[in-house]
Length: 271
Image 1 (cartoon, rainbow, N blue to C red):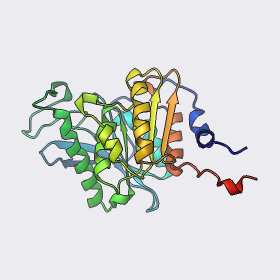
Image 2: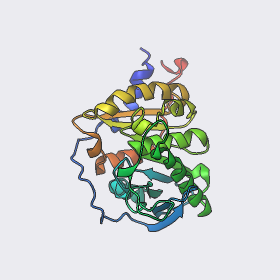
Image 3: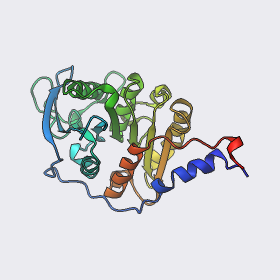
Image 4: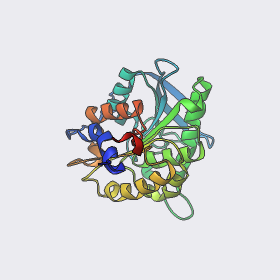
């Protein structure tokens, strides 16, 4: 009997789904990421701070890590350690108004708590410029754009997919706890424009926003990125802000090693 595509896909995801939920503590602000400090400015003048670790060799990618609203780059500590162990590079960014990136274009302190979201003004939309500045910094450090991928959590995932949709050399893309329109930033059209490249979506089943959004986003991704290029992982009894554990970090690295599911066997090979 010929196995269906869904059953083959299920086998390919078996290792990803076998994650024992664990309670992930929020990293302390003092928990420093491996690497060196990096500073640069967005096109509109925001002073941005990041932590950079170079890839071990040219065969490894460099991931831009984008945290969610109200967080900071130290959120990525479990993943940063796993990436370093596997030889991947990363640039973990404090998005504008967060962490050390709390100085506005006028040189005065500014945090996300004072950001405005309205029809006339959405301060979170400027985060697109933060990603542009991060990628430009990497390119200046001789990291080619085709070696750059994006990983974002929550709002950071929205910013990541919007950038990747407009830059076809950037891949892969991983979204933790994605939503349809965090802070009035809709991403369905961006998912539709992200074509022919691997995408991973991870969510906790206790996260209502992500649980409702992922089936919709994944359906669009399968049409745009591709069936084999789209991977979805749901974790039981886990909320979004407790999602990133060392176990999940290891699974994300495993996905980076093989982000495309094996091709279904041809009919003439099933005998």
